[in-house]
Image (cartoon, rainbow over the protein chains, first blue to last red):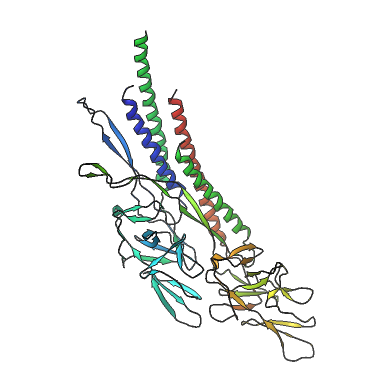
Length: 242
Length: 262
């Protein structure tokens, strides 16, 4: 068999894998705070020693995320926060920290704030709210509550808001954002939040649909090469058997 | 098979669940004391095919790896406890709660349930019950010759009885609050039940602490915003459509493959 078929195979494999990335982005288009995954393909030359460099395999890489903002939606719920511009909320993940933009916070039976079951971290660790009649979250992430019997708002803690360049961030296996070097990020005082809002995903439906279409056709073309390679081999076989 | 198909399937399924919640919210636009449901999604775990930073040659590390997502996943539904619009009625046994509290009622099985729907009535014994006929806790009995029932902001129920100039106090309505109302289990019939996630109930006199006040001659409408639900519905429908398009693209790819191979 000609080596051509393996080159075509790497292209087809790349299209299949990239399709998975785009399918995942589209499946999460309504997931609040979801950051779209990027997918890139690199050429990898195969040294075959013939003196003629004709085999470049396609290799998919996908570990980068886009950090452009999604649309903000007003929800009116006290415990919903959206980050305005760049930045992330901090949640507890295993023994360390991970970051998310999904700001639909919940309380547990003890009054501890969590997002999808993971404790939200403030500057002093997990945040527990006392019994209160109203909660308010300031633009810098300061959480204050009105305790029964008091007319004044009392400051409880401040959300740990972090920021980093998109190139330094990746996702972990739970879909939470983490630093590429594995370190915890430092709190950034310039990150702003908007309470009673939630941010949608930042997936662009147009981009994803176009990518899906183009990958579909790219796969089809790889199949044509696959077939051409098969035809060539068959012609060779006919010459021998004739 | 092409994994993209299964990933799109999770997207289609999620939108299906979302549409169900939207339909229920819209159906309850005129239900007194109804709190809207919100579906919360999360991306499914990622499959790491190649870890970033693996050694590729001497002194060469792979700059980025391959992480493939597996789609979306419904974490659960959340009841959104924002206050609904208050409407005034002229019925003396309609109450609305302005604030965080719930009225407590006793279910036939002896367990407590909580509600914000304040369309109270009397049963055949004069006991104050909710619209489903469940007695309020603490129980309040209204004498059958009573006229002019008054329910104060602090929950004090009184009525004028013939032959008596001053209003006779009949009892005290109490309100109950939870640290995490979102954790309550919705039972239908506008009722909620305590769960481990909601925390223990704290009972008190209306107007005290975090508990709201009681307003007579008013009802709390549902907190469903029709426009918001309609926009969500359009988004859910189109997302469903786009996910099915990826599904058919993935199917096409498999078709090209089976046509190429013999």
